[in-house]
Image (tube, rainbow, N blue to C red; front, side, top):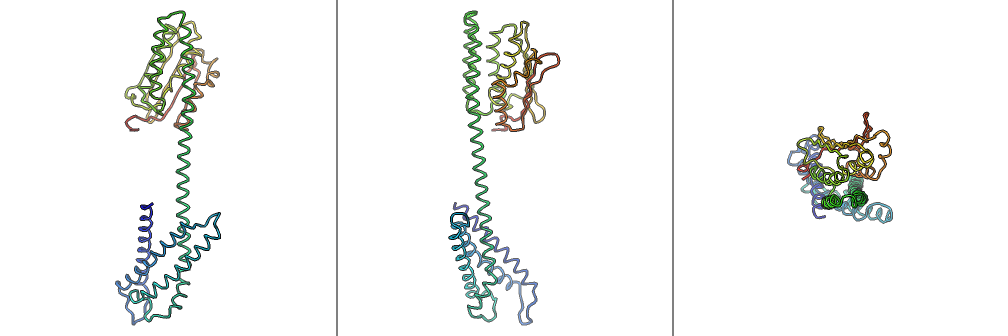
Length: 357
């Protein structure tokens, strides 16, 4: 508050100093009686000192407007107070001219105060109300800016809350599906089940480490995805063939946590797990200028299943999270491939860990 007051005072002083300099220039170019010589010093004193008498008057009006602005709920009182302040300014301005005339030199022979007051009414009444209007404009602009900041803060909190809700929805869904995969192996292969439980523990630990993080480096996301795929690899054996194609120099690219796991889970459950023959899952990541491109592709029956897979919990969740984080600067497409299979294509802004820091 103190800093704002000093800024206001400095602004008022600068404004009226500039006004005084403009008046000085006008005085130097005016025609004067032959018995009066308007020197630069006299013009500067008359222009700047006269303008400076407005500094305390403007600050008085500023304080009055900020204390009693014209707004609903106190309209009559505010108009009455501000009218009184304007009258006071007109009178004080007349007193200043009348009292400082020997230094300002506006009147060669000082007239009665009544005449100076009448002149002040004509010259300063409109200027005083103009000051009141300018302060109101500044005040309303400040309030609009404050409301804008509050709206942005509320929007950020809303997005944060929605992301937390989406993460809370995704984690149980993912855990339920992983436990189902492990349950299928309990009686068939206890050793494999044990390895799957160890992998699940690693996966959960990794996901919990990033539960409050909006973005993680790509290397962390790929490590988490690898934990999940190791569980599915134990369950499906040779029926799941994995291929990784990760472009160089992208380890520090930032992505939302648990972004690729729902896409891989979609591909495995709707395509590869339903095939008797071995199925292939490709994970590709590459940079394209300002964009990060991520593909999760399978070789299952894409034409028959793509429309069903678009509305699963995982994909719906991923789309919602991406919209919260990037708005329209992202895309997620699920395309059926001509030779069979489906490709989930992600395009995100390429942001790097060192840039975010």
